Image 1 (tube, rainbow, N blue to C red):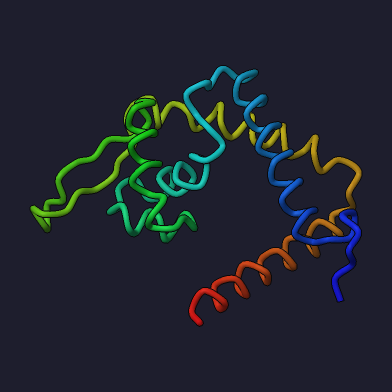
Image 2: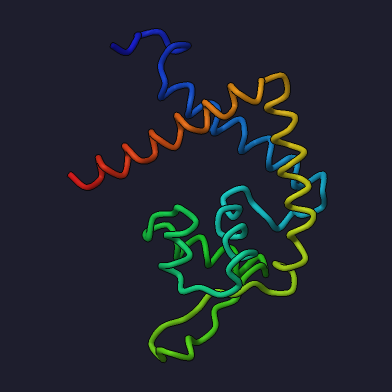
Length: 150
């Protein structure tokens, strides 16, 4: 049973942590001088730093983003000169998303900012507790996917 106390409500705690981590990441990016990278871009950037070129739908799937969010996110990332849309050589009707020079160059500073920020936010939490937390959150994400299929 879920408690009526906010301090014991999982939804409240997760949403407050999300807002706090997002705020800290914004500040961390600014301190690192990567003002054109927003926390919302991180999943797509991490994916493109590994994959180099993907169709928007595949990028969204791999980055864990909803298809309805991808167009606006890509528009903003393109505006901030991090990605570009290029024609798909296998399908003239489709496009691919690739990093720009700025997007490639942002990897080092972004990784440094993310690492520094998350290290500070998770300081004092034993590794075993952090691993348990990640396992629980992955299970919740899996359960959310199952709920969405009903």
